Image (cartoon, rainbow, N blue to C red; front, side, top):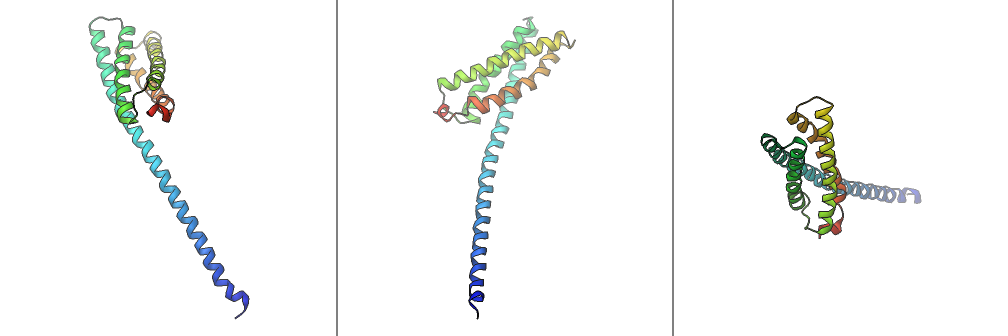
Length: 165
């Protein structure tokens, strides 16, 4: 047997081991990615659940205040504030499992005041310029502002590990 023939099986074995190692590394990276993907998906589902709870709560506040003849922009702001408080508690504890901190509260307030301004401005635009009713106008603003505030809270308010305690 030639020297080349004797070394050929060793080369194949080394190549096979190398390919197996690469395959295992790829599988392990895929598993890690899926774990991260699953975690993000679970957070998204929890965000959505909290969003539904916030929406129901804020809409109940809003309709109750409108029925009590509170001006609709004020009722919209109060409804949004009720949903925001509920959202901080549920997202902090359940969605992100973060400890309470002054930094998280301050960031959350910044995001929510931005959301409050957006809600009030969109509500005014939709009702005044869109010629829709006050209740329908508020219902139309909810998905836009909710998606925007959830995105910012996920990427900023609760993203800093130092915020988690």
